[in-house]
Length: 185
Image (tube, rainbow, N blue to C red; front, side, top):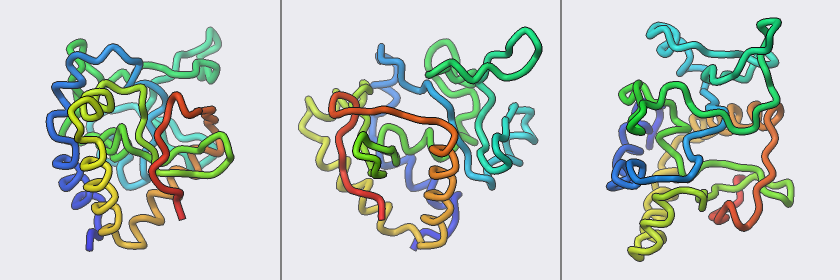
């Protein structure tokens, strides 16, 4: 049973073999959007002078927001580029990478039917690469086996962070964008 976020992050690093090679050649606007955090990830990032924004007293995001002339956050940009991503595509905080980043391209997302699913984002070079290599089903199977090993308490924290995030940031994904894996229960 995986009881801590650190344990889960260690295990996730082995779920997506060769993902960095896909990231290096990727031309999709991946690694964009608002990167939400579990509350227990916040202090570690703040200690490293990573700017974090809190919305509605419960939604923690890496600060990728533009500022308006008055200094307030500009919440109109749909998919901002992560400021922690280096020019070559590497993550500048790789060792402290948030759970959402380690999980991508398989994450929880709200689908057009209003339900939440574990999904594989199709607009990702890694999705293309594993699909073309006939490895997609194996990757999905390994990911879902890992999720099944996560303790109910940790799963609840992950879902709670996602639900808080989805309450302030809307997504409108379709079959072109997502491959549904399994409804989140």
